[in-house]
Length: 405
Ligand SMILES: [Zn+2]
Image (cartoon, rainbow, N blue to C red; front, side, top):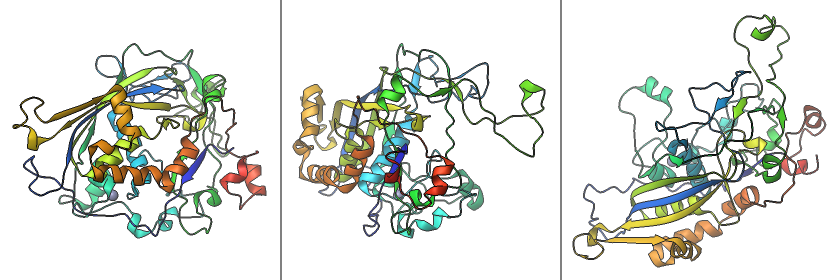
């Protein structure tokens, strides 16, 4: 079975854009209730996890790349990685614009015969003006590409967003049993357009997500015995280990991941979210108990399955901050109370929040995502990229045709 699939987009349903609501004074002047506070989240690794420490190389045959740590030496999941992951989920569930990050959206594949950039309807392109932002740009901020800044210089629109995510920290993290040379991850090229386009071959297929591989990633992680060099027919031997000169490129990585069973904790702070923005943030984190998120390197190999559990929600109502002498406008949900609040689709927090949560929770996007990110610890489905031969024999095949490779 192909290791990824897409959560499709209903293209007739355009992203709803407006200026982000942001009051200089914390107490809103109108009737609209805004949500400010923090959500504490526990993140448990369900399979090994690897996010490279940028100071270490993953292509050194002798020394493996190591997982990123903070200044105290604790292993972390960077807040930026978490934000990227939650943002993509929010884009899918909340019908946001398409942003580019982590190179996940491979529309610019030079070897491909299809230019995927032209297959994304204009209304779904990344938001450009900070007065017309989709729900994910209003919540998580506008995405920017550095080269755009260079080209156009000052005056480019910016919105920082209303959500901040701290690095998730694991104390006393346990490493995987040994360093590994990962399996080769490069898929067949050119990209198989029947996978990346919708059935009518008109638009892109949607947003890409990788299936979980509980058994394979935990019990029999597929690896190589060494780094595998890129073969270049017209190139002199470049492998320095064999007397060649210069940099050699490899098709896999040498890494020491963290093991499954590690627990990280982080805090998500949010400020002045509209009801539907708050509901979207909550469901992007909580999903439902049958699902897991996926983050970091090696997703096609089964690495990076994580379980997110909200542990404490604190809401601050600034309108009651100085009149409520007991709680100073602060409401806290913890443990079972928080589980119940989410299970009841945030009903206790007001109709607008509950209605928005219900819409995300019963929409098409989450059913597709549930199919891809559903978690069955006993699943033994084998995932692999189809071979080049398979593609030449099945030029129009779609992802579902790979079920019995
Ligand atoms: Zn946007």
